[in-house]
Length: 499
Ligand code: BG6
Image (cartoon, rainbow, N blue to C red):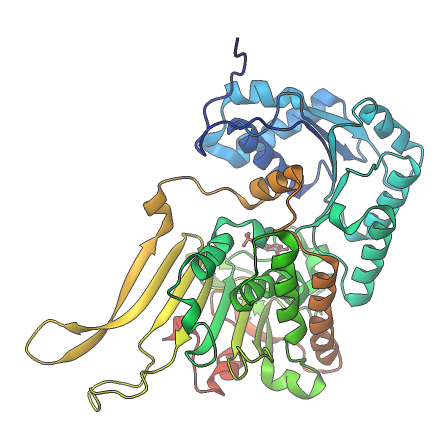
């Protein structure tokens, strides 16, 4: 008799889900409550979590299993909204339990060992969603308690260090305990459905690849704009800034997928090898180039949409003399045959006018226009890949506008993927947790990638630190400081939203 009461899935037939023990360090934290537990709930609701899987929250507070499950239920209700169903929770809630562990207290790990005992053959995952300063201690204690075995997986949440040196130390510590193939370094952008669509667009279609190089592409823009400010993360953010928080990982990963050579297969190392080559081919930006190839800003009070917001320096927990950047624009160049001479403009910031992540690929002019004299010189073709909030692919072409005269006008061929497929896209963490449970490393960063990204970021940070000027102010609700428009205008271009 089928006793599985879970609703049928919106993502196809129910597969036989493998059992697992997932240990969530930082189990009471913001990420666990806001993203990880709701993602696990959704996987369960979709039939992708086995009924004997266990999710073990771990943190410093003293909580019973019931109290932890109650907190998780409140968070899931809040974050899943109308998707939360009591009947699903009745099946999911009992998978949760809790162990109190102070990351630095050796004896506490015995409690965890006891909880895990007897399930040595089940896939065991340790998700470290604590600050990176605790990674080393946790790894050391897990190894000492002998609860990491050859099939265990360690999931590491970003930030992975604050520079190449600290990232190297974290990687050494974790690497001393488990093999590289057991380490799942998260960049949640890689888990976004839309980022994988970028791979589908490039490598599933014959159309784009012949155009995908310096001969046909003039420039590329990658924008990740947020309306949110620093929220309740001032302590972390003020030490980190937009360069380390967003560019080192999310924007560079997007750049890699956009610019990499076609991998031979979709296997983890085939993809990661190609991304690594892009990172290693990035032209360094040091003291001499930083002033022309980078712009940084810090938001002041302003209006984001209809909301009036305070400036960064007035945010709770921020040092009122802080020089931390909340906006970055960078001209990146990739020194390869494919991309020599094609600028990749990267831009990200908080308190910008829109919440949007977008890639804009601008193609070259036609080699010779038979319509000379009648049209402006803007390049006619542009591919806009919008990753969020709504997933859209738009190709701008010139078409004749109706009437007697031969007048060409830009028009958009637009594809809204949400409307087309009419299916709920998987949330990033849903996919990443699923892939880690299944042992698929393709969407996780390899050690050498992380370190190569830091190696490119570190000289930019050092150049900024050596420069007294600090970030330029910009009004909340604007597209960053004037220096950002100036950076791209120096090459004769403009940001996409300025056109
Ligand atoms: C995180 C950053 O990695 O990504 C945050 O630490 C940022 O500062 C967030 O807000 C943006 O992610 P998303 O998925 O909302 O675009």
